[in-house]
Image 1 (cartoon, rainbow, N blue to C red):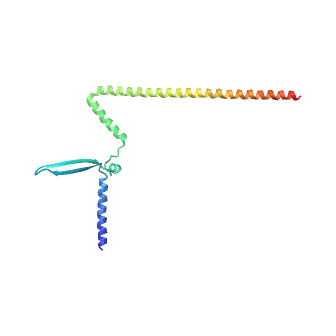
Image 2 (image 1 turned 90 degrees about the vertical axis):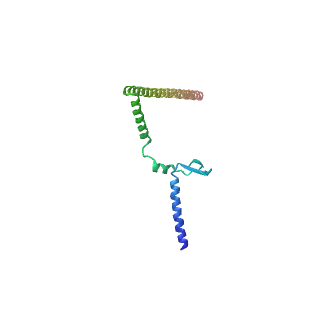
Image 3 (image 1 turned 180 degrees about the vertical axis):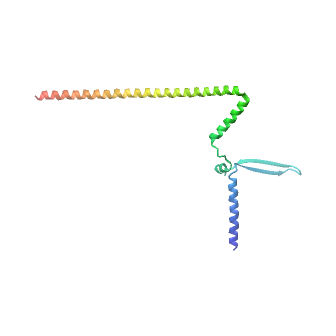
Length: 164
């Protein structure tokens, strides 16, 4: 009976310890506080915060993280920045700034498109050069085969004439 009670108590303590460890795994940092008495009404306090070596980022995110996507957060931040700029600059200056930004983005897109087209032209030119080089090699091989065939025919004709 005593061993059953002891096993039950140890099981309860172990379960409490596991719950505590799981909770501590969600702490990004651990605090270390040290108090040293210096006199009757004085104390020296030493405080250190250390990164938690057993920190579980996934559990922390599941418990405290938002389910928003990064894109939604960036869009919200951009909307807040735009509203602050609109309030600070005024509607006319803000519209001019947006027009300049849009023109810059259009210029960047046009530049990127021109670079892409230039790369395509270069690739096509290289492909044409390779194709013409291959054609020259094939024509040279065909000419060599033709000369060899012609020499063989002449040799055959010469042998026939000698036999006759």
